[in-house]
Length: 255
Length: 240
Image (cartoon, rainbow over all chains, first blue to last red; front, side):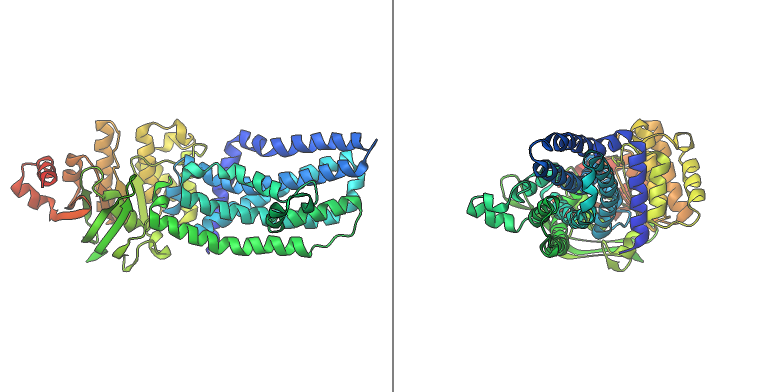
């Protein structure tokens, strides 16, 4: 992996963001409107259930953070495909790993900036949120690692399945979030879904996030392990899928 | 001396009905350093498949392709290859300057600004340096694609239908520019085109491919001894 190739890609990404003002608006729109809705709800919920409002607010922050992380990386790739510039990038000597690493760096920087804004707004609504900030930051790191791991896997899937499957760039996370039991314990699911939920990347993060906001003791072992496991497995899977696309001819057709 | 060596390469795909067919079947050819080599053939003959395998975007099922003595797609080799297509596209929000700037960074070109300035002047693109890609005319886009492919002064340049959709006056200019690239820089050029006059004007040698098989490799001068022009040659070769 050559750093200058990644720097060139990051330079290109920064120009694209700078030259498309609406892109910034699009990145901020859903996370900020979402945190405003649940921020107001948490203020209202103080009259009947402080914890319910806090849980909704905290989980929505993690949800949006995960979405921005994963979708930024994958939508950048989809833009390269839609614009027909992916071929030019790959023929500029950028390898498949350098390509994805650069997307992950841009996605991490973007999503961390959005997270900081969301936490800032949450603190205005619920100043007590500052008491659990340390744990929230820790869980955010695991959320980031998990969402980037998903971005790697989804990139591999789009490369191997073709551009007509590009929709998974913005739909896949919803299924992962649902199966990760965001607002409720995974035991609420019927047993087959519960088994699946155990292996979802965000299940243990959401579980600990709920414990954090209600003041229960938290353990970072499972969230750390599951997010790292996803990240470690994502790379060989991506390289295998990319090689398959190179063999099947899908890569040459992508754009 | 051969700079690209294709030996016994085959690539099989499946059609919509699931039947297997050879896009390229047992193809072998050598491309010499410094020559302009054209790959001709009717639509669906296997030209793009063959070029994609030379570029390393597609892996052959059988056979080997070596480029500059290395496996096609090798990282070191990719640094010395340029590619431009008449249908080349870049991100819509990037300007001419951005696009060439990225290429300069990706290839770690020394004195990047000077090199980009040279290319903008060479292709007459200085006036649209700050225009976004979507705002460029078809001719400007084709010239930008050529400029992009030349940023790192490649040893091998792949040109896929470089004058596709261009007005005749611009096509003539682009062809002259392609010839000048070879003369000034000594680059090897691999060309695919449906314009026989273009091939006749530019190429030293031609490979004719049909139904995945290389039917013939000959010099343009040799073809002209037997056919009045390349169009007649093309028609005869398609007839078999």
